Structures are given as C-alpha cells and as structure tokens.
Length: 84
Image (cartoon, rainbow, N blue to C red):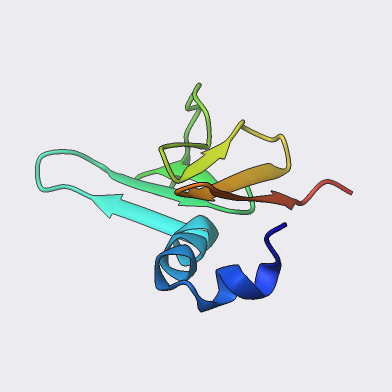
C-alpha cells in the first residue's frame, strides 16, 4: 500500500498537485483559459462552459464536479476525495 508520505517526496507529484490548484494558459493566437481546483473555468476572465473532464491525462484524471481527483505515476495511484 502506498502512503501519502511517499507521494510528498516525489517532485513530479508535487508539480502536478500545484497545477491542480490553479492553471492558466495564454496563447498569442487564442484566448486565456483559467482552471482551478475549486471549479473555476474562465475564458478571458468570463465563465466558460467547457463540456469535458476537468483533468484527463496519463497523470491526472477527474470528472467535472465529481470531487475526486486521481493522480498516477507508474504503478502508483492516489485518489484525492474533496466530496463533503
């Protein structure tokens, strides 16, 4: 069983966890997109209706408004549960 302390030592997991809190992407040819771990989805500072998973990558997965985030690296997996 993997414990949280093992993940805390991993630099890649720390980097990914930081991205989960607030992610902003700006492009010279497109708009600015902002996503936060609290559910904010903005396009150029206005609420955006983005109909897809919050995180869907090899390392992070989360369905929109599920309250669950799954972090993976190799054979290790950590599920963060933010449901009340």
